[in-house]
Structure formats: structure tokens, C-alpha cells
Amino acid sequence: MGKKNSSKNIMLPHSRAKVKFYKTYLEIYLRVLCNSSYVDVINIYDVFCGMGIYNDGGKGSPIEANDVIKDVCATFPSKTKICLHINDKSRKRVNAVKNYIQNSNVGSHDYTPIYSSLEGEKYLENLSSEIASTPSNTRNLIFIDPYGYKEIRKEIIDKLMSNGRTEVMIFLPISFMNRFTKHALEHDEIAMFQPLCNFVKSSFPNNHPVAEGKRMSHLEYISYITCALRFGNKYYTTSYHIERSQSNYFALFFLTSNVYGFEKILETKWKLDEKDGNGFELPKQASLFDDLEAEEHKRIIFNKLLERTVSYLRSGEKTNQELYFFALTNEFLPKHMAEVLSALRQNGRLEIKEIAGCKSAMPGAFYINRKEGNRIIITLKK
Image (cartoon, rainbow, N blue to C red; front, top):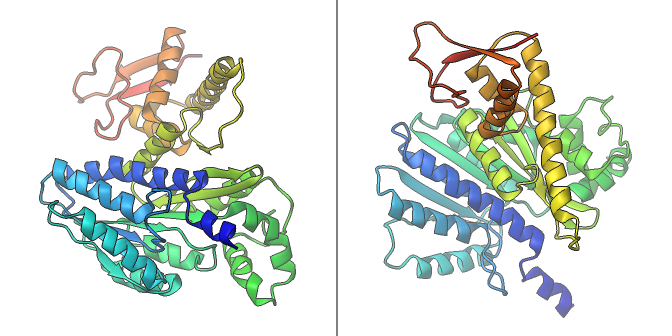
């Protein structure tokens, strides 16, 4: 019993990877929002805050969020107000987090988190109504790290997202869900299987492989859930898998209505996983061929975007903005698209012309970003 309890009180690698992802995104995006003249209030909601500080010194999500907010407020003393809302069904956990934050915030920026202790599902229902009328100068980020998946209902997620000024990050136990989907669908009368059964039935049509309970890899299962959480392409959605042990995966899912928020989450993915921006893997035994394998993998990833871009350009001329959106929807960064276009130009395969009436383009520039607007038209030579 002691060993089991102690394992819950130390921060395992997959938990560190999860919190690192959350922290990194906050570091990137809060600075963007604080520099925006259109955003005056940023709300961050940690729905299942957990214990906060682990026995081995590891920092949980509410502590890392608090630290990032303090740094951002000190760096950008602007008109932007950042509110951290911390909740957990366990009042003991909330109080422990509160005590730690109060002690660590002494003498820092005038900012006080808001604490509550509600069941996760109730909190999310209340929150979905509360933020429905979010004003245009406010942005919301909701971090949902449940104790399983029972509190996750697709209709609540859609309602949380409906105001167009909210982003949602969800952490789910993929391996467990994948292993038990078929069993849950076949025994939907059993109470313990109903939440998973309801999630699957609300997310997939009857003839879908997941809804049919077919066997698949955990990464395939993640891919299907990612597609379902796009709600028919209503939102930009991506995922980041996290390996806990061999054949045991969790995943973070991120939803946003804002293309710039989507770009920033892709930056987070590629910053933490330089190989292909897909997820966290446990360290493998070192090999003499690691460097060669890494270079080969980079070449494969580059060629993947190259082939997709060539196919896209074959359908007709494209503006720089169209290529910017194409890169993001394929989960690549603008810099990756610029590298592909540079290679095509060096091989004499591109024709580039300026759009009439626009500011003259700089030689060699592709303007693969959201700020420039349409500057050039790119055509693939036959």
C-alpha cells in the first residue's frame, strides 16, 4: 500500500511531459495576448488542479501556470488582466495549492487566483454558461486534466468553444479508452462503461471503426478522436501523444477557433518534439546510429510536406496566405513551408509574381505568415 501511495505522490515522466506542454504553450501565447491591443482580460481555468506540488518537488499544472503568469506580468506590465481559476473536487488539494501559491506570490505582481472546489462535470457545466457571453476583449483557456474521462462530454466541449474566444486543452487516457471501447459498446447497460460508450456514440457514426469497436493502434485512436473534436472542421484541433510506458499512451487534445492560437500550439508541439511535432516518447537506449536516423527522419518529414505542397500547387496558383493556411492545416509551421518553397524555387519549379496594388515584395520573401496579407502569387511550373 505504501508503495502505491508513494507512486501517486511523485511526478512521473508522462506527467512532467503533460505539464511541460501546458507551461510552454502558456509562455508562448500569454506573451502574444498581452501584446495585443484587442485583449484586455485573459482567463485561465484549471478544472482538475490535482495536488500542485509533488513529494519529489515536481510542479503540477496550477503551480506552473501561476509561475508563468507572474513572469508575464513582470515582463509585460500592461493593461491586460490575467485571471487564474483553480478548481478540484478535493478541497484538501485546492487548499494545498492555495497555500503554496500564497507563500510563493509574496511581494510579486498584484494578482490573486480564484479558487473553488466543485465536481469537474458540474464545474464545466457552470463554466459553459458563464463564458457563453464572453466579451470581445476577453480570451479563455480551459485546461481539463480529469481523473479518467467520465467528466468529458462532447456537447459540453462544443458549448465551451461556441463563443469563438475560448481554447480548450484536454488530457485523456488513450490506451485505456482504446482497450475498453469494444467492451463498453457491448455492455453499455453497465454503469461504469456508460461514459465511454456515450463519448464514442456522440463522436462517431455507427459505421466508423471506433464506433464498431475495431482493433487499432493507440496512435490511430488518437487520430480519430482529433478528427472528431474538430466538430466538422468548426475548430482547429490537434493532438500531442504522451508515452507513459510501452504501449501505454495518453494524449493532449487542443481546440481553438483562432488560427493564430493554432499556430502557437503547433509551435509548442514542434519546440518540444523537434523530430516531427507529434508527441513525447520515453527515452530509448542510445545507439551509434541515432544521428543518422534523426537526419533520415528529418528528410522524410521534409519530403512529406514537399509532396503535399506540390500536389496542392498543381491544382492552380496560390497566394502566400493560402500556403500559410495549408501549412498549418497539415500541422507544419510557416518556416517549414518556406523551406519547401525555397527548395522548389532553387530547382526552377516556381513562378512568383506580385499581386497588383500591393507593396513591392522583397526578393526571396514568401510571406508565409498571417500578418502580411496577400502579397504574392505562387505557381508551379509545368
